Image 1 (cartoon, rainbow, N blue to C red):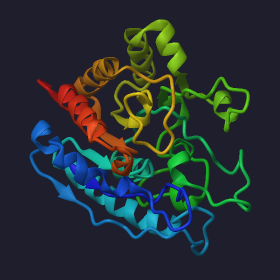
Image 2: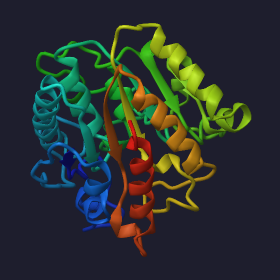
Image 3: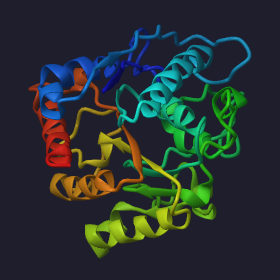
Image 4: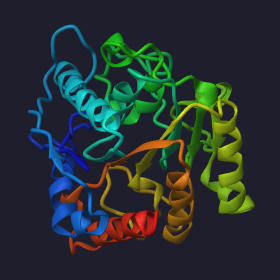
Length: 299
Protein backbone atom coordinates (compact mmCIF):
# COMPACT_ATOMS: atom_id res chain seq x y z
CA UNK A 1 0.00 0.00 0.00
CA UNK A 2 1.35 3.38 -1.07
CA UNK A 3 -0.32 6.28 0.73
CA UNK A 4 -0.21 9.34 -1.54
CA UNK A 5 -1.71 12.36 0.29
CA UNK A 6 -2.18 14.72 -2.65
CA UNK A 7 -4.78 17.41 -3.22
CA UNK A 8 -2.78 19.19 -5.92
CA UNK A 9 -5.17 18.49 -8.78
CA UNK A 10 -8.24 20.10 -7.20
CA UNK A 11 -9.40 23.70 -7.14
CA UNK A 12 -10.10 25.45 -3.83
CA UNK A 13 -13.84 25.75 -3.23
CA UNK A 14 -13.44 29.29 -1.89
CA UNK A 15 -10.62 31.76 -1.16
CA UNK A 16 -8.25 30.32 1.41
CA UNK A 17 -9.71 26.83 1.14
CA UNK A 18 -7.50 23.79 0.62
CA UNK A 19 -9.16 20.59 -0.66
CA UNK A 20 -9.22 17.86 1.98
CA UNK A 21 -8.37 14.83 -0.17
CA UNK A 22 -4.83 14.86 1.19
CA UNK A 23 -6.25 13.45 4.43
CA UNK A 24 -7.88 10.45 2.74
CA UNK A 25 -5.03 7.93 3.19
CA UNK A 26 -4.82 8.68 6.90
CA UNK A 27 -8.58 8.65 7.49
CA UNK A 28 -9.12 5.46 5.48
CA UNK A 29 -6.32 3.81 7.45
CA UNK A 30 -7.94 4.90 10.70
CA UNK A 31 -11.21 3.38 9.40
CA UNK A 32 -9.52 -0.01 9.05
CA UNK A 33 -8.07 -0.09 5.54
CA UNK A 34 -4.67 -1.48 6.54
CA UNK A 35 -6.27 -4.26 8.55
CA UNK A 36 -8.70 -4.94 5.71
CA UNK A 37 -6.04 -5.33 3.02
CA UNK A 38 -3.13 -6.64 5.14
CA UNK A 39 -0.45 -5.26 2.81
CA UNK A 40 3.06 -6.69 2.98
CA UNK A 41 4.23 -3.15 3.64
CA UNK A 42 2.92 0.41 3.84
CA UNK A 43 4.83 3.25 2.17
CA UNK A 44 4.01 6.83 3.08
CA UNK A 45 4.81 9.66 0.69
CA UNK A 46 5.29 13.12 2.15
CA UNK A 47 2.37 15.46 1.66
CA UNK A 48 3.16 18.06 -1.03
CA UNK A 49 2.48 21.75 -0.43
CA UNK A 50 -0.70 23.09 -2.02
CA UNK A 51 -0.44 26.54 -3.63
CA UNK A 52 -3.33 28.10 -5.58
CA UNK A 53 -1.05 30.71 -7.19
CA UNK A 54 0.31 30.44 -10.74
CA UNK A 55 3.58 28.50 -10.93
CA UNK A 56 6.33 29.24 -13.50
CA UNK A 57 6.11 27.73 -16.99
CA UNK A 58 2.79 25.97 -16.54
CA UNK A 59 -0.93 26.67 -16.80
CA UNK A 60 -1.72 23.77 -14.50
CA UNK A 61 -2.71 24.37 -10.89
CA UNK A 62 0.23 23.23 -8.71
CA UNK A 63 1.85 21.99 -11.94
CA UNK A 64 5.55 21.94 -10.93
CA UNK A 65 4.80 20.60 -7.45
CA UNK A 66 2.54 17.95 -8.96
CA UNK A 67 5.21 16.77 -11.36
CA UNK A 68 7.73 16.41 -8.53
CA UNK A 69 5.25 14.45 -6.42
CA UNK A 70 4.31 12.19 -9.31
CA UNK A 71 7.97 11.53 -10.14
CA UNK A 72 8.41 10.34 -6.56
CA UNK A 73 5.28 8.23 -6.87
CA UNK A 74 6.51 6.79 -10.17
CA UNK A 75 9.79 5.76 -8.54
CA UNK A 76 7.87 4.11 -5.71
CA UNK A 77 5.42 2.25 -7.95
CA UNK A 78 8.25 1.07 -10.21
CA UNK A 79 10.17 -0.25 -7.20
CA UNK A 80 7.14 -2.04 -5.74
CA UNK A 81 6.10 -3.60 -9.05
CA UNK A 82 9.71 -4.52 -9.81
CA UNK A 83 9.80 -6.46 -6.53
CA UNK A 84 6.87 -8.55 -7.75
CA UNK A 85 4.37 -6.86 -5.44
CA UNK A 86 0.97 -5.38 -6.31
CA UNK A 87 0.86 -1.61 -5.68
CA UNK A 88 -2.34 -0.19 -4.22
CA UNK A 89 -1.98 3.58 -4.33
CA UNK A 90 -4.38 5.31 -1.96
CA UNK A 91 -4.91 9.02 -2.65
CA UNK A 92 -5.48 11.77 -2.80
CA UNK A 93 -6.85 13.31 -5.95
CA UNK A 94 -6.86 11.81 -9.45
CA UNK A 95 -3.56 13.39 -10.47
CA UNK A 96 -1.79 10.47 -8.76
CA UNK A 97 -2.93 8.21 -11.58
CA UNK A 98 -0.26 9.78 -13.80
CA UNK A 99 2.62 8.98 -11.48
CA UNK A 100 1.39 5.44 -11.00
CA UNK A 101 1.12 4.84 -14.74
CA UNK A 102 4.50 6.47 -15.35
CA UNK A 103 6.11 4.07 -12.91
CA UNK A 104 4.72 0.99 -14.69
CA UNK A 105 5.33 2.44 -18.15
CA UNK A 106 9.09 2.41 -17.53
CA UNK A 107 9.09 -1.35 -17.98
CA UNK A 108 6.06 -2.18 -20.13
CA UNK A 109 3.22 -0.91 -22.26
CA UNK A 110 -0.12 -1.17 -20.49
CA UNK A 111 -3.88 -0.79 -20.71
CA UNK A 112 -6.10 1.19 -18.34
CA UNK A 113 -9.51 0.57 -16.80
CA UNK A 114 -10.71 3.98 -15.62
CA UNK A 115 -13.68 3.61 -13.24
CA UNK A 116 -14.92 7.12 -12.54
CA UNK A 117 -18.14 9.11 -12.53
CA UNK A 118 -16.40 11.48 -14.95
CA UNK A 119 -14.21 10.81 -17.96
CA UNK A 120 -11.70 13.49 -16.80
CA UNK A 121 -10.95 14.49 -20.37
CA UNK A 122 -10.42 18.24 -20.11
CA UNK A 123 -7.41 19.40 -22.13
CA UNK A 124 -6.34 22.50 -24.07
CA UNK A 125 -8.34 21.31 -27.05
CA UNK A 126 -11.64 21.81 -25.21
CA UNK A 127 -10.92 24.71 -22.84
CA UNK A 128 -8.79 27.86 -22.84
CA UNK A 129 -5.85 27.51 -20.42
CA UNK A 130 -5.02 31.21 -20.79
CA UNK A 131 -8.25 32.02 -18.99
CA UNK A 132 -8.22 29.37 -16.26
CA UNK A 133 -5.55 27.22 -14.63
CA UNK A 134 -6.10 23.56 -15.43
CA UNK A 135 -7.07 21.33 -12.50
CA UNK A 136 -5.53 17.93 -13.24
CA UNK A 137 -8.13 15.98 -11.25
CA UNK A 138 -10.44 16.68 -14.19
CA UNK A 139 -7.75 16.06 -16.79
CA UNK A 140 -6.08 12.81 -15.82
CA UNK A 141 -7.48 10.64 -18.62
CA UNK A 142 -6.67 13.26 -21.25
CA UNK A 143 -3.12 13.55 -19.92
CA UNK A 144 -2.68 9.79 -19.67
CA UNK A 145 -3.55 9.49 -23.36
CA UNK A 146 -1.10 12.22 -24.32
CA UNK A 147 -3.25 15.38 -24.41
CA UNK A 148 -2.03 18.42 -22.53
CA UNK A 149 1.15 19.98 -21.18
CA UNK A 150 4.37 17.97 -21.52
CA UNK A 151 4.83 18.63 -17.80
CA UNK A 152 2.25 15.91 -17.16
CA UNK A 153 2.36 13.86 -20.37
CA UNK A 154 6.10 13.23 -20.76
CA UNK A 155 7.90 11.20 -18.09
CA UNK A 156 11.47 9.90 -17.72
CA UNK A 157 11.98 6.45 -19.26
CA UNK A 158 8.24 6.19 -19.95
CA UNK A 159 7.35 6.46 -23.66
CA UNK A 160 4.38 8.73 -24.37
CA UNK A 161 1.49 8.39 -24.22
CA UNK A 162 1.25 6.52 -20.94
CA UNK A 163 -1.64 4.52 -22.43
CA UNK A 164 -2.93 4.47 -26.02
CA UNK A 165 -6.57 5.49 -26.18
CA UNK A 166 -7.65 2.25 -27.88
CA UNK A 167 -6.46 0.40 -24.75
CA UNK A 168 -8.53 2.48 -22.33
CA UNK A 169 -11.92 1.53 -20.90
CA UNK A 170 -13.84 4.32 -19.16
CA UNK A 171 -16.61 3.04 -16.90
CA UNK A 172 -19.19 5.16 -15.11
CA UNK A 173 -19.35 8.58 -16.80
CA UNK A 174 -22.69 10.09 -15.81
CA UNK A 175 -22.66 13.42 -17.68
CA UNK A 176 -21.68 12.41 -21.21
CA UNK A 177 -25.22 12.45 -22.54
CA UNK A 178 -25.99 15.97 -21.26
CA UNK A 179 -26.27 18.80 -23.77
CA UNK A 180 -23.69 20.84 -21.84
CA UNK A 181 -21.17 17.98 -21.45
CA UNK A 182 -17.81 19.62 -20.70
CA UNK A 183 -15.60 17.58 -23.03
CA UNK A 184 -17.68 16.00 -25.83
CA UNK A 185 -14.58 15.30 -27.93
CA UNK A 186 -13.93 12.23 -25.77
CA UNK A 187 -16.75 10.61 -27.73
CA UNK A 188 -14.65 10.90 -30.90
CA UNK A 189 -11.73 8.93 -29.47
CA UNK A 190 -11.04 5.19 -29.51
CA UNK A 191 -11.63 4.98 -25.75
CA UNK A 192 -14.15 2.26 -24.91
CA UNK A 193 -16.80 4.37 -23.19
CA UNK A 194 -19.17 2.41 -20.96
CA UNK A 195 -21.18 5.06 -19.15
CA UNK A 196 -23.41 4.53 -16.13
CA UNK A 197 -26.50 4.35 -18.33
CA UNK A 198 -24.98 1.56 -20.42
CA UNK A 199 -24.15 -0.29 -17.21
CA UNK A 200 -27.73 0.08 -16.00
CA UNK A 201 -29.09 -1.11 -19.35
CA UNK A 202 -26.77 -4.09 -19.88
CA UNK A 203 -25.77 -5.10 -16.36
CA UNK A 204 -22.37 -5.30 -14.72
CA UNK A 205 -21.60 -8.71 -16.21
CA UNK A 206 -21.84 -7.37 -19.75
CA UNK A 207 -19.70 -4.37 -18.78
CA UNK A 208 -17.04 -6.73 -17.48
CA UNK A 209 -17.11 -8.70 -20.74
CA UNK A 210 -16.75 -5.54 -22.83
CA UNK A 211 -13.89 -4.39 -20.64
CA UNK A 212 -12.05 -7.68 -21.07
CA UNK A 213 -12.58 -7.46 -24.84
CA UNK A 214 -10.64 -4.21 -24.89
CA UNK A 215 -7.88 -5.60 -22.67
CA UNK A 216 -7.64 -8.65 -24.94
CA UNK A 217 -6.76 -6.46 -27.91
CA UNK A 218 -3.26 -6.43 -26.36
CA UNK A 219 -3.57 -9.65 -24.42
CA UNK A 220 0.04 -9.70 -23.26
CA UNK A 221 -0.05 -6.20 -21.83
CA UNK A 222 -0.72 -5.69 -18.13
CA UNK A 223 -3.49 -3.30 -17.14
CA UNK A 224 -3.97 -0.78 -14.35
CA UNK A 225 -7.28 -0.14 -12.58
CA UNK A 226 -8.21 3.36 -11.46
CA UNK A 227 -11.08 3.60 -8.96
CA UNK A 228 -12.44 7.08 -8.30
CA UNK A 229 -15.00 6.80 -5.52
CA UNK A 230 -17.24 9.43 -7.12
CA UNK A 231 -18.43 6.66 -9.46
CA UNK A 232 -20.71 5.72 -6.56
CA UNK A 233 -24.04 7.48 -6.29
CA UNK A 234 -24.05 10.66 -4.22
CA UNK A 235 -26.66 9.14 -1.92
CA UNK A 236 -23.97 6.81 -0.55
CA UNK A 237 -20.82 8.79 -1.49
CA UNK A 238 -21.31 12.54 -0.97
CA UNK A 239 -17.73 13.01 0.30
CA UNK A 240 -16.20 13.92 -3.07
CA UNK A 241 -15.62 17.22 -4.85
CA UNK A 242 -18.21 16.52 -7.57
CA UNK A 243 -20.88 14.09 -6.34
CA UNK A 244 -23.66 13.02 -8.65
CA UNK A 245 -26.37 10.56 -9.65
CA UNK A 246 -26.86 7.96 -10.91
CA UNK A 247 -23.88 5.90 -9.76
CA UNK A 248 -22.61 2.35 -9.65
CA UNK A 249 -24.16 0.19 -6.95
CA UNK A 250 -21.54 -0.78 -4.32
CA UNK A 251 -22.20 -4.51 -4.81
CA UNK A 252 -21.82 -4.17 -8.58
CA UNK A 253 -18.61 -2.25 -8.03
CA UNK A 254 -17.21 -5.03 -5.86
CA UNK A 255 -18.19 -7.59 -8.52
CA UNK A 256 -16.33 -5.61 -11.17
CA UNK A 257 -13.24 -4.82 -9.10
CA UNK A 258 -12.89 -8.37 -7.77
CA UNK A 259 -12.87 -9.89 -11.22
CA UNK A 260 -10.54 -7.32 -12.69
CA UNK A 261 -8.03 -7.53 -9.86
CA UNK A 262 -8.16 -11.33 -9.93
CA UNK A 263 -6.87 -11.26 -13.53
CA UNK A 264 -3.17 -12.09 -13.49
CA UNK A 265 -2.54 -9.24 -15.93
CA UNK A 266 -3.81 -6.61 -13.47
CA UNK A 267 -0.71 -4.79 -12.24
CA UNK A 268 -2.00 -2.18 -9.79
CA UNK A 269 -4.80 -0.03 -8.40
CA UNK A 270 -5.33 3.66 -7.60
CA UNK A 271 -8.08 4.81 -5.22
CA UNK A 272 -8.89 8.51 -5.34
CA UNK A 273 -10.95 11.62 -4.58
CA UNK A 274 -12.42 10.80 -1.14
CA UNK A 275 -12.53 14.00 0.93
CA UNK A 276 -12.84 13.31 4.67
CA UNK A 277 -13.90 16.91 5.31
CA UNK A 278 -17.18 16.08 3.58
CA UNK A 279 -17.70 12.78 5.42
CA UNK A 280 -19.65 14.08 8.39
CA UNK A 281 -20.33 10.79 10.16
CA UNK A 282 -17.51 8.62 8.79
CA UNK A 283 -19.90 6.45 6.78
CA UNK A 284 -18.16 7.16 3.47
CA UNK A 285 -14.79 6.05 4.81
CA UNK A 286 -16.36 2.86 6.16
CA UNK A 287 -18.02 2.17 2.79
CA UNK A 288 -14.76 2.57 0.89
CA UNK A 289 -12.97 0.26 3.31
CA UNK A 290 -15.78 -2.28 2.98
CA UNK A 291 -15.65 -2.19 -0.83
CA UNK A 292 -11.89 -2.68 -0.86
CA UNK A 293 -12.03 -5.40 1.80
CA UNK A 294 -14.59 -7.32 -0.22
CA UNK A 295 -12.65 -6.71 -3.43
CA UNK A 296 -9.42 -8.22 -2.10
CA UNK A 297 -11.00 -10.97 -0.01
CA UNK A 298 -9.70 -14.38 -1.11
CA UNK A 299 -7.91 -12.93 -4.11
